[in-house]
Length: 323
Length: 249
Image (cartoon, rainbow over all chains, first blue to last red; front, side):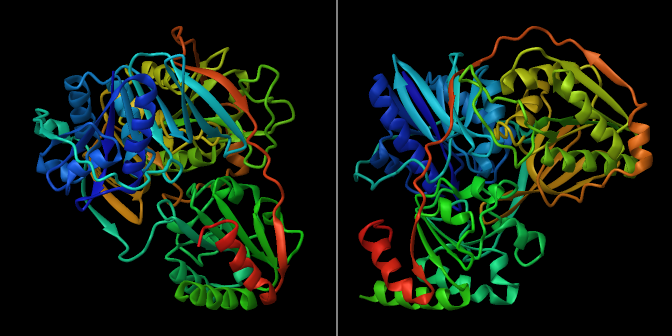
């Protein structure tokens, strides 16, 4: 048996979420007597052999430069061709913007089914059981795909990639036979805010809510984030008020995040916000209202004025990091 | 243009979710159901496309008789016609998409709008499933969209840290993201008209679910957090806890 893992890269750098998927596949493969093949699309990716360090037995690369920009239709065709070549019934992706777009098309192309946004995997009697949050995290569903072809997308930051072992694996080149028609849907380019971490990918997030009282106070959030190398997030109220861009919104109508550390500043903790961040590993809340619901979800809370606590927290962390 | 919008009948965002007696689905008693918020962006996008290029807007919804109220909500916003695909038992996402694709395949759809996700199963899958089943284009998480009279599509989709520009052509499935538009509020006239608009009922072909639910559970209840202290004086203790106990810094 063989598990295929779709490995994403941006500007040649392999995404951390993909390393997590490779490592998770290796864990599942060891319980099923299976091997792991990583699929890399495009010519630009750097050092694909390093995926061996996360548990891939080999890499199949479709080094077609047209694939360096995302095309859902071409990626579907290419991955289906790689899966057929490698006799892989099981495919792992990451539940990233690209993975979420691609996975359903691939599941249909393989005549299988998809379990999206998986947060836990286990093997029981030779079958994969996948757990995923539903109803905005208010319930968990454990499911099993009954078709031979199975596609799973894994929520980023939930499975650990660990450190690379230093092993390398062979890289095979494969021509997937793509034609111009394969690129019926294609990206013509991306605009990425430079130097800004995205909340969906960040290991740490500092988020602000209504309690920040206005966009002019965001330097307090940004300073703390800068010390922690964290992304900045925002509550829905703040985005709807136009203080911050929608890309920063954490919660039900924004992004779902699972960072190692989530610092909620002046956020009361509406159920829609909690839906997006309650799977964070450690949550710190700073709010002047001691009855704010966020304190029920937070691991550590400070009851106090964000305008006093944030500068003190930033200074204390600077000292801590320096020592 | 022949415009379709797939809509979903889902529990309100603030609904309390309890697991039902079967241990595999929610207990719907006492839960208020609404038109999936992301689908409102889809309905609005359909109406805007009709206003720009003509045609009509048909909403499609899969479920029991209770979904008719949700179809009427889309009518009140301005949709022209409805299709209710009647299912007696719960279908997985593949089954929902299969039923919709079976209905759409003979109706020469130009544009099919959806929300990026329904807020019950949060799967982000039905738009891509339908498109691949129909063999047409798809773009998901769309926050900006231009469709010209010739059917050329330019869409911006949200990706990590920015936006991606996608080009394709109709027919296409477009999954709407917040930011795409501002869904209109139904006017009284629209609400009155909604009662008279036609809903076509369709019995779908039998379908066997491809995904088996083993169990549904409530997430483990987290112990309430610790209040470290009041004001800036509590900061040194917080830093110590984050370093020594939580080990995150």
